[in-house]
Length: 506
Image (cartoon, rainbow, N blue to C red; front, side, top):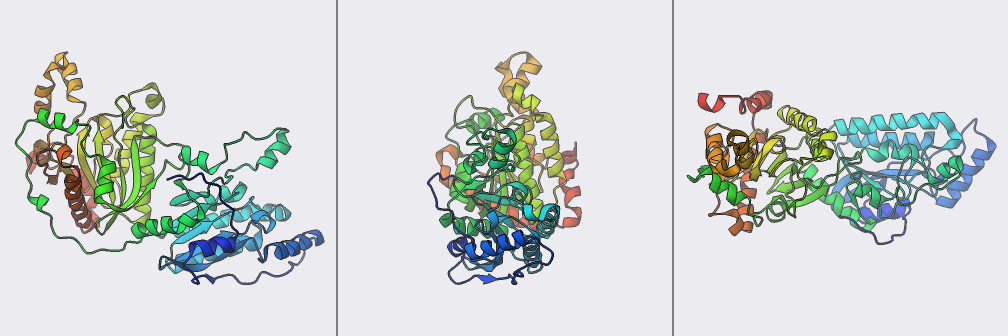
């Protein structure tokens, strides 16, 4: 979800008009005094000129309006007022708006465009970033969406506080974004800052923001995000036919061969055919992204969720899931907990990335932390065994309140060939090892690990759309079901599913 077409940078009022439903904006701002007592005459004159130039009384406008009929609070910078800098009056206006949005249980859209804190006010203005950050933190802790649209330019203290705290963060095409102001760097070091680093497009490429979109598309992005984040409590669906499906009687090796068919539906196709309001997110938000994982907001039927899952390599030989993928997955887990949404994990991997880079990136530790977070996740959770389930990369996304499995999915500590090589010193006994290790769905059902089986008729690769639609209905049902489980004993029940001997004890 990127865009590179040139775009005119809008004023605060123009952005409000472009994003909010026509005529719906209502200002929350009270007038700022024309002059502050005790300030220098030169600064008083700067403020006067800024008001005349911008038509605004300060560097931010706040208020509320409707986006596709939904009430939303907004905070938008006016860059033509002293480069959108934040002084005491602007900081008070921002903090007051955030606190009001929290009190009134409103989602909040911020549109910063600022050079940072106001140099004319010095350290007091600098310290106000702490107050603004505290207000945003309280808003997020209240389980309310905080969405950010980074505009050109956003740097300094604004980028290092309320500009970088969005649950979902998108940016204007071509926007200059970063901590360091290029003019400051050049003045300090007598050379220009490297070009192309502080651009919206580069930040997207590095996994720091979720998308690059022009202003005219912003309302649609916000509406799609809020359709998931504010979906409420939809009516529970009727039980689908798959609740009575039983695992097939075939051998494990047959399922493994079926699961390796490159035409088999993957997570992308499951979302395309079975979900709606899908909004892909991008990267960890901390400078990493990995093609091995897909993270998104989505709804299955009426049930909203955070989706994270293996993204099957498109080409033979591409790397599997690496440590950055799991750090991105943990971003999704945190989003689910903070926003009170169910988490859906989708498992379909031939194995994690086996490389020098993965080892040095801490793959083993990230698998451990992913397991730790999923076992203790406060949100309801559903996992899906969609196809291959090899090794720690599969286990890292498995723990959940309910697990759905496609009929020919499987779960194993290693690909069967690897297990055969360890035990028998040859890969030729892989079929025998697969059966002996209990990797197939029937064995997982017997152990109590899999709760719901989605049949294949006879192979998902031969009925891609129909299979995905059937799986989506099962997901919708399980998402609704786990939300009704008693929260008090959720963690105990979840951990108990994986206890040694749990299946044998019934």
